[in-house]
Length: 91
Image (tube, rainbow, N blue to C red; front, side, top):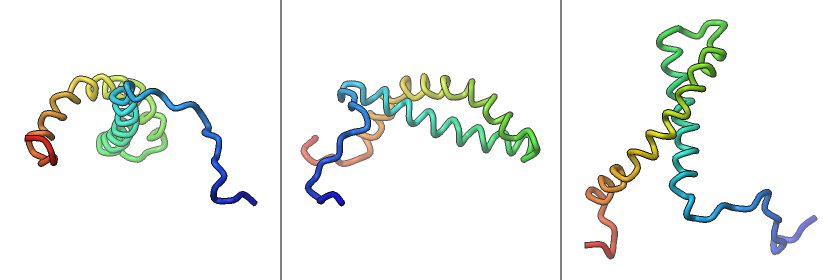
């Protein structure tokens, strides 16, 4: 049994914070591209026997495109957020 004060060794070394925008874009692209592929394939082709194969085939193209798009639109989205959200200390 371990005590609550015992620190666990991390599974991997964390990346430097300067990579935050890229890691955010990577995770966002993975999740959003997959969800969009699932929905679009279901709407267009239905939930047939080749559903998952088709989703993965489409995802292979969609994920890198989504990653690039998130990187491109992130600065614009951050400006929109700054215009619409009241952040204390910023005027």
